[in-house]
Image (tube, rainbow, N blue to C red):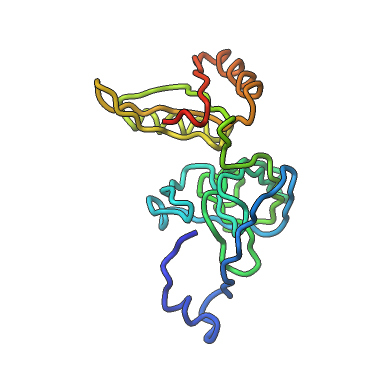
Length: 215
């Protein structure tokens, strides 16, 4: 998580004016599906909304994302609140937390789903369930295209809990700018087609798109 280096942060090591900070670590070159970590998770919200994350994405506090010190960006993790049993999936797109004793920093949206917003922190179990970034053989499903970005963002918010990698792509056409909503990323065509069938039963008309054919 990118954050301003405050005077308190500068003096923490010598004055004890805040929580003990730890230095950044070298990101993992790769990780396997099924990798598990347990420990304390925290969350970050409106103070960082609209700012750039370490991955270069703009932080949206309502998206299902998280910061981890070493997992590769775009890794999808399943987080379980061990006290309540609640679960939520999130996509790693930022670095942090840099406070000792914590290993995962959730977006407001993910923390809300896990009932962590009030307490501020919670003991969680994190399991890697998807790897990123997508290879050229991966697939998206396009489920909508809108002239107004607010409509695209509304659909994205609706789908993100089920598909943490849901994104809005801006496309400029002769008629104007369109905002395309795509869910994924799926690691095989069969996986994408299975999801497409489920979405079709819900009234969508999914369009199968290879990951190397974006936007």
